[in-house]
Image (tube, rainbow, N blue to C red; front, side, top):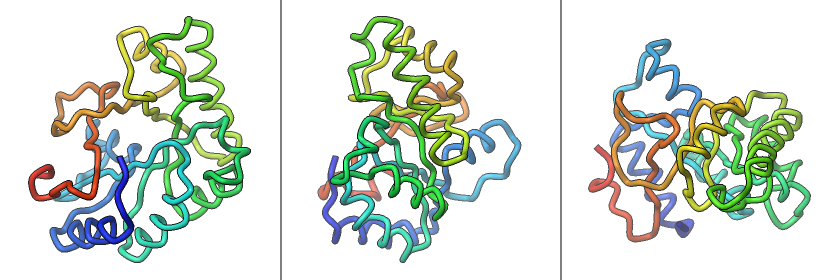
Length: 195
């Protein structure tokens, strides 16, 4: 779930050398729905949990290589100055990065009662939209915990996608509320996990 700065830079160089184009989740949905032409080799880069090193180290590397990413933010962490807080989140949005939801407080959504589930989903969406002035239509389920109740609640809250950790390829038949993601580490071989 973590990548050292040197390896991250090598991953970005590999994507550039292999002609991948980074897109955000709004673009992914538009491509899926036929409203946008897909680049030849699209890829979505995501970060979870408001980790400050993603902002301080990852963003300059991505900007160096001209790539973009989606930041799934825990809204209760926006007051933590040792994390990607509200000001840094606004800065990311202003720089063209996509800001999306990782819930209000990062609970295991399958274990919480319905009223809390609804609040976690709706309140985080509302707060991030208010902060950035942009729609928040995508959620990453904390700990990748989801079931039909969680997915239905996410859809009812106004989300268009829900992301999980599952290293399979996204296809035109994939469930948008079970978007697969690949967990990256220093040992990840991109040539083996990307088409």
